[in-house]
Length: 55
Image 1 (spheres, rainbow, N blue to C red):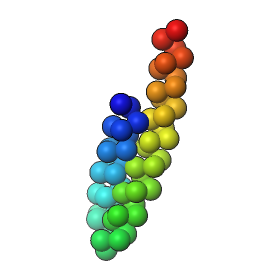
Image 2: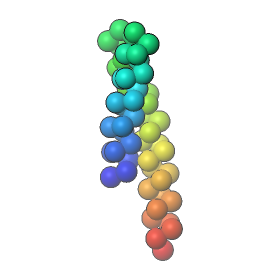
Image 3: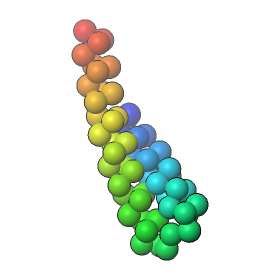
Image 4: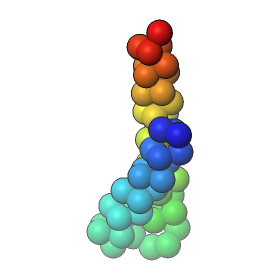
């Protein structure tokens, strides 16, 4: 669940950042995808940490 939340938040952050920098539609899509992947990886490690710490 953390991974999916990270992907959604990352896509939103990336899209807002690209639109703030006055990017075109493909720029916004690329930023959204890149940030979604980055936040998904961070969420993956957070999930692993939570599961390992719960033991």
